[in-house]
Length: 151
Image 1 (cartoon, one colour):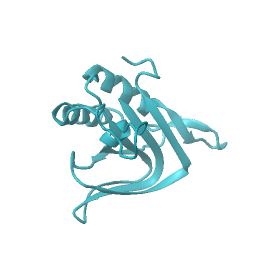
Image 2 (cartoon, rainbow, N blue to C red; image 1 turned 90 degrees about the vertical axis):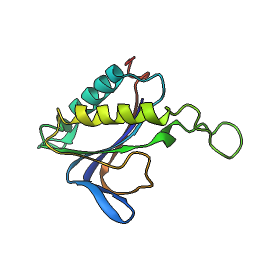
Image 3 (cartoon, rainbow, N blue to C red; image 1 turned 180 degrees about the horizontal axis):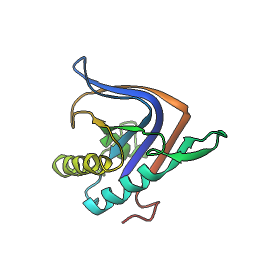
Image 4 (cartoon, rainbow, N blue to C red; image 1 turned 180 degrees about the vertical axis):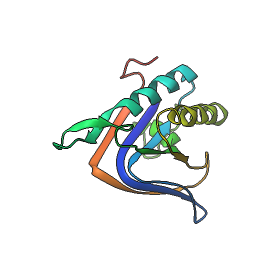
């Protein structure tokens, strides 16, 4: 599983010109799954992400968690995180999870995020979406389950 986490002051996602999800301060998560991912991997990844201390404290240090700031989460499915651009000029997405499995893992991620945040919003799986955000910092992290030792 791959996740791009952006700390935001606000973010929203629209489909066909209509806003389907929006948040204030918190995380915008772009989430990609591959076929080898499991519900256990999703749970561990979301728990890790939601416990990260990346919000500023009174001294300006990144020392506060999502819960500490009563933050919100917007989760967007993003199979293009698995793009392979090594050959030619057209990315291959062969490593991205099959849509049925990826959608189930995406839904599991949403459920797990609900354990950590009072508000969790999301896009529409498989839809063309437009995402707007104000990145706070900017502060962006990329996390991969294998690199975090989550298997």
